[in-house]
Image 1 (cartoon, rainbow, N blue to C red):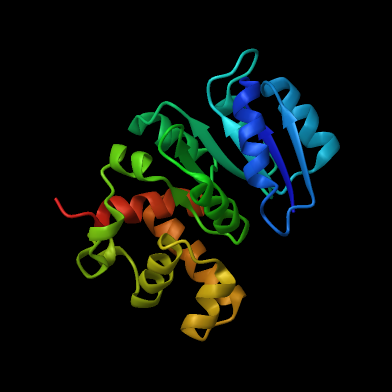
Image 2: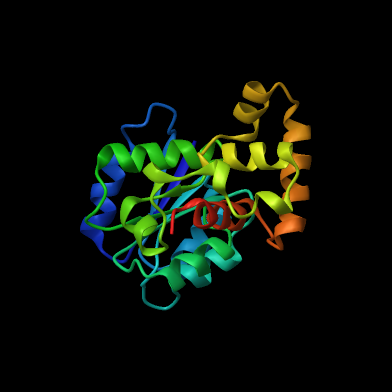
Length: 209
């Protein structure tokens, strides 16, 4: 696995690099100090995961995110945890959102591994800002349930827990292709464009009022 770290703060990049290098299957770690360098690195480096700061000179993380190939898993790292920014990042395809100062080494490693497997990660601070409390979700009372079939609901609920298509398939005795088809069907019914948007909507609808 190749990981690209993008942040205009050299100290932050160094700290994240030391964390990422602890992951057993990471083969290469590269760095970029702003958005322009990030896109150049993506062209030359082909990372699997990008840790992407939002506020940077020349080009913001959100502008970079909009231009990343869809096969790259982007995890946003920022000090800004407002709901609008998180929603915009998710809408652009971000697979994770962690807030500086609120995550530790284990959370960064866990986020990278989860996103690489196809899961979605919202750190505690980010979850709170969009009114999500992962410990008190009530799937059986999800307001989106009436829009979906029972199987679509089960698959989306599993995706919202961070499971990959392969893991969902094994648990629910389906093929990965069938899982993908159920998710795509759910996206259409929910009016969203990708897994990240669907998961965010599911979490919001599952959270108690």
